[in-house]
Length: 442
Ligand SMILES: *Cc1c(COP(=O)(O)O)cnc(C)c1O
Image 1 (tube, protein in one colour):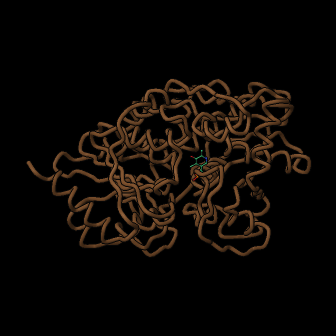
Image 2: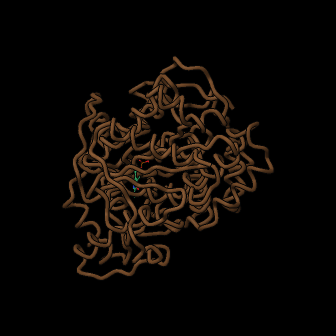
Image 3: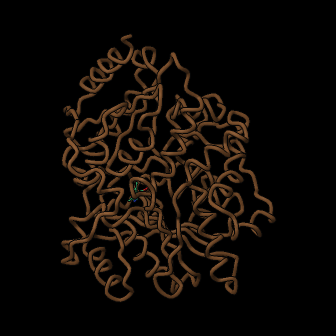
C-alpha cells in the first residue's frame, strides 16, 4: 500500500517509509491511497474469529509488501495477547473494554503494533529516536511497547503536573531505552515541541527521528481491529438484532481512535453512527453543531487524556468523508460535557448497574444516553482506560478505595528517572543532541 499526504504536497510513500517518517514533510497526515473493501465472507466469519486472526485479515492490505504475510502473522500474535471483551452494561448499551493490556489503556494496541513494525524495519547502524508527546496514556503505552527494543530510543515529553501519578510512574520508572522529560507547559506545548523537531532540518540530518504519536500509521491502523472484534462479539451475543449496525461512542482527544473506527466502516464494517464524545475541549462537537472548526488552547478536565485543543487526527476523518461536511454530519454525531455529569455518571452506573466507568468511558456512555433515543440503535462505548488509572478521581467520587490491577501494581515504588525542561524549543533540541551524542559513542 502507498500512503499520500492529506495536504497533497509531499510524495507518496510505502508503509515502511510512512512508519519511519511518521509525518509527511508538508505536515499533512499519511493516508492510504485506496481503502480496500473486505469480502462478505469475512463478516460472516467474524463472530468466531480470534483477535490476531482479525488483525491479520484487516492489516495485511496496508502493510504489504513491506511486511511479509508470515512476519505480519507473527506480529499480530505478539501484539493481540490480551482480551478485548464486549460487556453488557444495560439494555442496548455495551462497553468495549480496551484496558486489559500491559498499561491498562487502549493505546497499548497501537503502541505494541508500531514497536514491532519499527523493529522489523530497524537497521543496526542507524538507530531511530522515537519522539512522543503525551497527556498521559500515550507515554506509558509507548514506553512499555518499545521497552528494550534494539536500535530504538524513545523520548517522552509530558506536561509537568499534567498527568496522573500512576500514569507518570508508568513511563518514568523504566530506564533502558526510555527517556522521559517533564515540560513546563501544557500537552499542546509538548506536541508543538515534537512537531518543531520534525521540521528542524539540521537536527534531522544528524539523527533519524520518528513519531509514535497517534498520527503514525502504525499506531493508527491497528486500532481498527477492535471495532471489527466488537461487532463480531455483538453479533454473537445478539444474532436476533439488526446486523446493519450499532452506534459506536468514542471518547476522543486527538481523534486517532475515532478515525480508525471510521476507516473500519469504510472497509465495510456495518456501523450506523459514530459519536465524537469529548470533555470541555469540544472543537469537534462544536464543529458538528456550527460548521466552524476552531482549535483553541486546551483546558484541563478530569478526563485528562482527552485534554486536547487541536485534535491532530481530525484531517483523516475529513478525508474519509471527502471533506464534505454534509456527509460527515450524517454519520458523525457530537457530544461534549463538563466534569460534573462525568462524576454523576460514574456514581449512577456503579449504583444501578454495578459497572465501574473511568472518566473517559463515562463521557462516551453519557453520549449514548443522549443520542440513542433518537438514533434507535444499540450503542457500544469504548472504555479506553482502566478506572484504576484514575484512582484519585474515582475514589473521590465513590468514596471507595479501588484496587489496582496487577499490571499497575508492578510500577509502584520504583524510583522515578525523569529530566525536566522549560517549553522552549532550543532546550529540547539541545537535549536531543546531547542524547544522540551519548548514543553514538562506541
Ligand atoms: C488517548 C486517550 C483518549 C483519546 O484518544 P484519541 O485517539 O486521541 O482520540 C481517550 N481516552 C483515554 C483513556 C486515552 O488515553
